[in-house]
Structures are given as structure tokens and as C-alpha cells.
Image 1: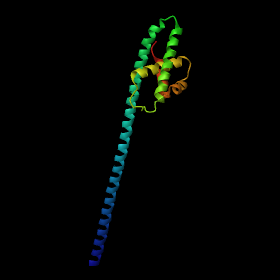
Image 2: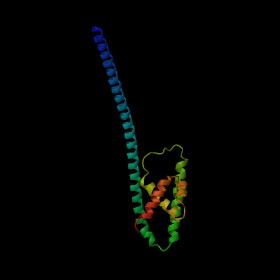
Image 3: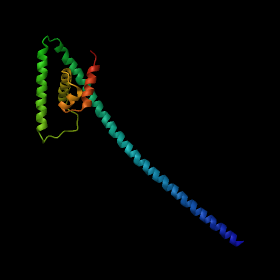
Image 4: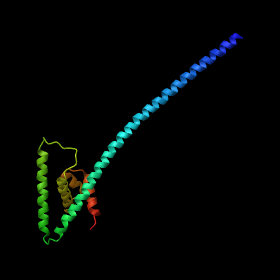
Length: 167
């Protein structure tokens, strides 16, 4: 009878050991899954942070564009009373030429470093005016973006906003 008791105890010890190993493996697997989820969560948080920054920057650009369009509309109202449209056209061409000259000078300066901040309101205003003038002269958005070396999306956005403005 003692042989039967030893064999049952031995089987119980093996079963207990296997059960303990199985529990340890399960805990290890759960910990590994948790560690992977933490890593994924950090990656998602980083992507969300980047997207949030991009959205904030785009909102800032949109607000600037809307403000510039309103300023252009106010500035255009007195010009619409002018009977001499050629004078306005010549003045606009002079502004465009001045902008191109100043842009070429800044591009030729190899020591200048472009900053990641938003452009100044003065340069944004002149570029918006130039974009709208070039569009009025019949140029496509792609041509304007290439000539002014600015993103096509910005040109398209400004043109859409200008088209949607109240008359």
C-alpha cells in the first residue's frame, strides 16, 4: 500500500509543479502583453501629440489667411471706386516684382536659416496679395505655388477662401 501512496504523491507533486510553471508562464505572458501595450500607447500618444501640433499650426495659418483676406477685401473696396483699372494693375505688378526681387535676394543668401515659426504678418499679407493677383491674371494654383516656392496646399486654401468670401 505504501507504493500506491508514493506514486500518488509523486503524481501530485508533478501536477503541482506543472501547474506552477503554467501559472508563471501565464503571468510572464500577461506582463509581456502589458509591456507591448504600454509601448503602443506611447507611440499613439506621440502620434496624437504630433497631429495636435500640426492641427494647431494649420488652424493658426487658417486664421491668418482669413484675417489677410478680410484685410484685402477692405483694401480692395476703395480701389473698386477707381475708374482707372490700369493704375491698380501697374501698382500690383510693381508689388509682385518687388516681392520677387526680395525673395531672390533672401534665397541667394546661403547663410540664412529658415525658422520653423510662422511667417510674419507682413510677408504673409504680401504673399496672399500676390497669390490672388496671379490667380486673377489667369495662373493656375500649381504655377503660383511653383513660382512663389510655397506649398500648393496653401495656395489652394487661399484661393478657396477667397472664392467663398461674401461679396
